[in-house]
Length: 262
Image (cartoon, rainbow, N blue to C red; front, side, top):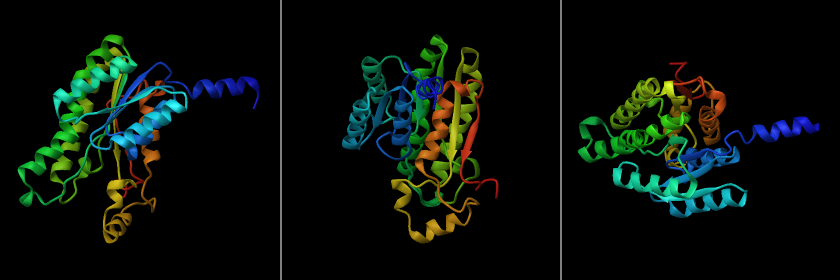
């Protein structure tokens, strides 16, 4: 590799230098890899976690040891007071937030006729209300500075439904709708809002599934394998960067062709 090519590669790998990112649910899985990738691209990263403090702090140390800037911050994203504290903590340590990755969420599966109010409210709070609170709080600053990226992690379930996941499907479907609406509001100020809809991805949550369920779902995927967190993270980082400046209001499906084959 020649000198000019080497410099170009190095500059290209730091295209988020000077930007500050907040990644929710970043202590493991897709969120963790996303935080690592954003840091590798030059962004300072606020690593949000709810319960996995040790994992989040280990990631912050890892980024710092690699020459980056990161801070781990605990908050339940569905609680507005905790979100406000998290944002204040992140911005006092790293600076104004330019990139928001709404990744935190969880499932509590049951048929709707057996689903409790708590099952509904908890999933709706984490998977929709939390991202909405964060976007509402941060988008004004992005629009004022005339640069910003919001990437919401939805799900293919929010597009097609899945028996036993009415709460999750409703929340993720609403998140897709929020993405499209915010995109139209923020576009004049050079702020993009997009979402990712992962299919079946190898994470701690899916590792707990029964083998027969994994096998049944695998039959629906033309790629004949489950996805990996880094494959979703790559899509998130692309949408968070300058090369995606003219892409907004989109929902990028990362599912190995599952929806196409339906």
